[in-house]
Length: 284
Ligand SMILES: C[S@@+](CC[C@H](N)C(=O)[O-])C[C@H]1O[C@@H](n2cnc3c(N)ncnc32)[C@H](O)[C@@H]1O
Image 1 (cartoon, protein in one colour):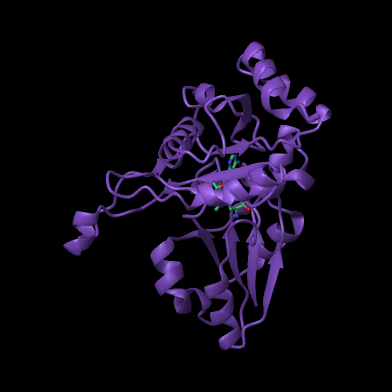
Image 2 (cartoon, rainbow, N blue to C red):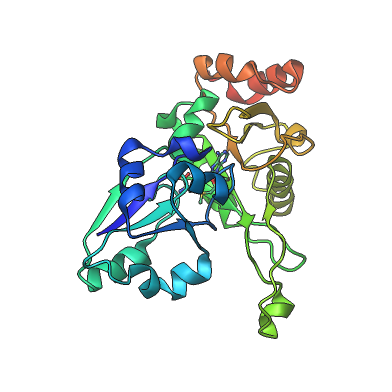
C-alpha cells in the first residue's frame, strides 16, 4: 500500500494517531519536502516517529517515483506531505504511477492551510479561488494571479494568496551547465507578496484592488508562534511577520461585520483600517 499521510501544519505532534501508526510500521518513510515545510526539522520528526525519514525532493518525486514505489505491492510505503496530502498540493503523478503498478493507495487527511486560514476569522464560505504568488525576477513577472483575483473581487469574495517557496533550486546558469549546485532556500514573505500585488495593479490598472485595500497576513499558522496582521496592502508591504511560512488573504467586499470585528483586533493601525472599511467594505 502507498499511504499519503498529511502531517498538519506546524510540528511533529500534528500528525494524526492513524498516520503515526502507519509511519511506525511502514517499510520506508518519505517526506515530501518542496511544496511546503514543517516548522521543525527532519531530526525532530525522526526522533518523535522513532524512524528514519527519507527526504523526497522534487527531483525524486517527479523523476524517481519508481524508487519510492519499489515493493509497494507487498509492503507499506509512507509518503508524508506537510498539511493535507491533497490540500493545495497534488501528487497526482505519484498516485497515477502507483495505479499503473496496481499498488493500492490510501490517503490520511490532516489540517491544510486551506482550512486553517479560517483562524483569521474570515469565513471559509466567503473565499473564492486560491492563487499562488511566485518570486518575480527581472524578466519574469507572471500576473495570472491578478485575473483570478479579479474574478473573486467581482463577486465580493476573499482571496487566499499562497506564496512561493524555493527549496533546493538551481540557478539558471547552474542548470544550463548541468551543475548540481543548489541555492539556499527562500520563502516569500507577506510584505513581498503585497508589494508584488501592488506592482501588478500599477501595471494593469484595472482597479482590482488598491494600496488601501484591506488584507490579512498570516504567518506560521497552527503553531505557537502564529502571527496575524491586518492592514492595507501598503501597510502589509512594509510589515515584518517574522520567519516562514506566510500567506495573505485579500479581503472581499462581501465581508461581514462579524469578520470585521474579528480581524480589526489585529489591525496594524485601527485608523487606516476603519477608513478603508468605510470606503470599500461597508455594503449599501
Ligand atoms: C503548496 S501550499 C500548502 C500545501 C499543503 N499540502 C497544505 O495542505 O497546507 C504551500 C504554501 O501554503 C502556505 N502555508 C502552508 N503552511 C502554512 C502555515 N503554517 N502558515 C502560513 N502559510 C502556510 C504558504 O504560502 C506556503 O508557501
